[in-house]
Image (cartoon, rainbow, N blue to C red; front, side):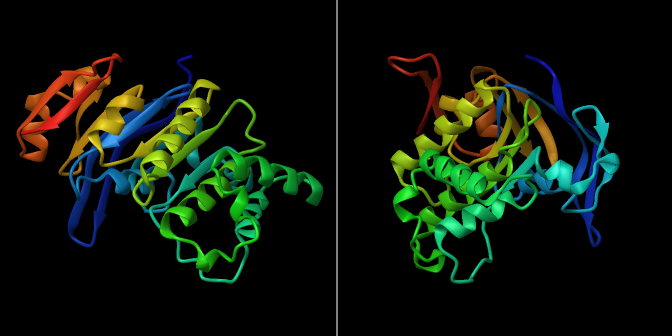
Length: 258
């Protein structure tokens, strides 16, 4: 499955007089989990914000072969879901009500919305939190609530689904980190285009179909985990010495800090 879901060409972003992204061109395909890596300030989250038009950018962006400017925003919201790094939501909504907010772009009755929300809360392991007030939840629980909200938003995406995850594992414990990335991988296997920014190189190595490394607002390298996560690349980008070895029982690389 090689259909292009997002084509970003010659993307440049400047904040004030400070250049953030420099002529970045990347295409993403359906059926792949792509992980963006890079040190702090490399431009990973800025690239996602440019791709979703949250930030103004020079360049060309298209979704499923159609220029971004030609999409109706409500229609696009059914196909393009974004999990941000953090949320400023402070209202005393229950977790279930926050998840159901994702249904705003959908054409669905209230009973349908409730069924969708239950399903996505099960997927993200928060069904037991459904009646808890959102502000009372931990950071990791809130992160999973918002993931369920985004999955609810994409329920009517059909064959054209893009899920952008900006540091989706940053507040999660070990089991939920793996469960979240397993879910992302499963969605990609079902045909979605899933793009995630994370910082853990070993999680990226284990789950990514494709890894992009960014630094100083530019794309450094693009390929499979074995092609990208080399000792030389990690040394050049992160300025740290590592040893890369095969996982003892699987096919992905393991990065050991020296």
